[in-house]
Length: 539
Image (cartoon, rainbow, N blue to C red; front, side, top):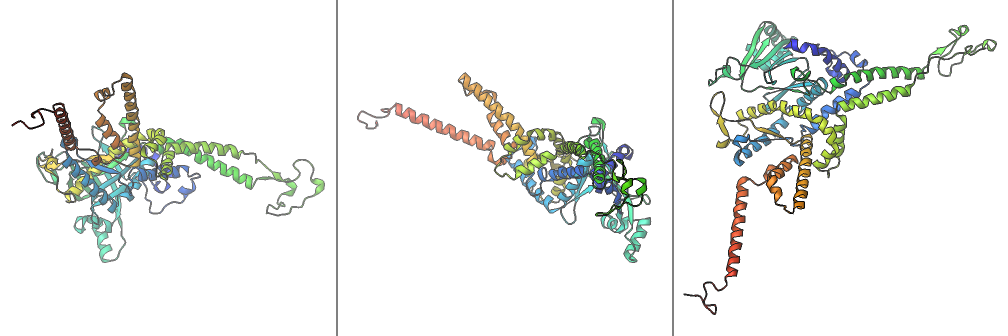
């Protein structure tokens, strides 16, 4: 897998230096940061654009202060009872995410996703909290895909202090040099020496269907110390624990790694950085210009502020007889215009205008989701492909969160209707939920669909009115389904809509009222039925 990754490492290094300098140590140790990398950066437009895009992902896709997702039952087990259980579970999961380290780690993942085109985050049962998330540095991991293009193989190299290794695996797991380092650290107050190990996760090709145990789980996981090598710890995993989200796929359908805004804008970023370096030279020459000095004044010209230089007036003849500025004809204004155009292109590549517009519209609390989508529709359409890819990639993370919390007993007992046989063991279990995204970006994208629904409904109404038959609209369009779809796109809570049982009860009540009205009308049309003349009842 590292061989597949090697061709992109050089590009990651260049992107790191120009876009995200604090992560520019691709394949190197960053224990002692090299300030020279920052001194080679003459413009921070791409750095700021990357930060804005990453912050926009956090604020408008997975905001910590808002409800950005909900779980729903899979279609084949959906009922009011089962759907309600999944939604209650999503509320519990949202609290667990907020209590742990999800939001700090997802921000790091977003930065990598925007800059390098791929970000990696894994989910594990925690010690301090129910969930523990770990973001992974670029170039520390390698990935592989299955035949359907999903990532199912992942390996990561770590360089950890021995104290941290023992905390994770225990004293009995370390051998050789690791054991020596731990003994010195523990008993002799020695240094907290770092050691390298790798973590490999891949499909368990030896698993036997129907059997249980770690050796028959869908994935196998092994931590291998590179000092030996020897296995620190190995186990099985029921679900793939790592989400590797790619902005877009590199090199089309055959690429494994991601292609992000920084890749697209890299030529412009490099040109802008070089142009700003030239502008610094032009500005410096304008502020402290080079001077042309006659040979008879060599060493006698005082260049200090207020300095006085004495020369022989009888020798100061001709255009070059006295000191004068030399080669200061650079056009600073032309360079500035060129840089401004390149900054605009870079910000466009990183969708900076979209996230700035969201921030501006957020200040207008009275603005609806539809109004927001109308103002950002063009920019949202350009952002839609990467958001769609994110939701597909992030399903791995959502499934892992659901399963860990379910095994920990954080959820209430599932209703019988939610239980289905597990495909590996045959034991009754609940299926992974359908994820409904409710963040500002998700709702704004979904509301674009509402524009089409509204236009279609209006066109159908105009058509039916012209024909003089409004009821014909119901023959062509499922009005209830259209209303439900539009409401969900606007983020309307699901319990606002009537359930099938409630709709049936309303229908039966309506039919009973109609029958009562018909009976009353019939009674009025037969005033003498059952009565004798004079109004006396007939016996």
